[in-house]
Amino acid sequence: MSLDAVDPDNFTRLLTLIKEGTITDKSGVEVLRVMLDQRLNKEPAETPAAIVTRLNLARSPDDAGALATVITEIITGNPKAVEDYTNGKNGALNFLVGQAMKKTRGRSDPGELNRLIVEALRNREA
View 1 (cartoon, one colour):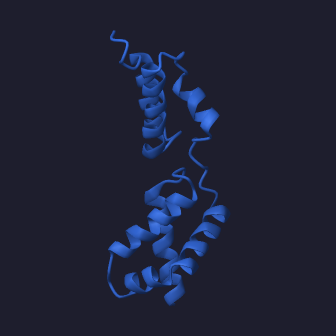
View 2 (view 1 turned 30 degrees about the horizontal axis):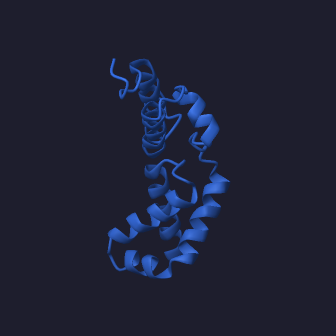
View 3 (view 1 turned 90 degrees about the vertical axis):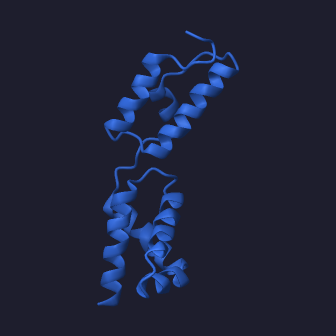
């Protein structure tokens, strides 16, 4: 194995964390960056699980109450994007989901956020 390569067992563990939904894809990229930096700097290699714990990258449990608060803040704080979405610009929804992902530090499922934001926008119109 090259000194610049990530340990295959740790890489497999990282993929398992992503596949099981323990971390999001975005968090997986962050863990991989840390793993590569450790190899590059010849530091002792942490396991992916240890990195996830240390950096608090575990996927949030998508607590409905917490997400509802985030979604309300995003909708209230971005009236132009809400108006654009209401006028049929679907790209505005991607912006709103991105803002929610930013607020949850990438720890929420973007598909679930998308669904919840659409639902909140529809309820707003009703």
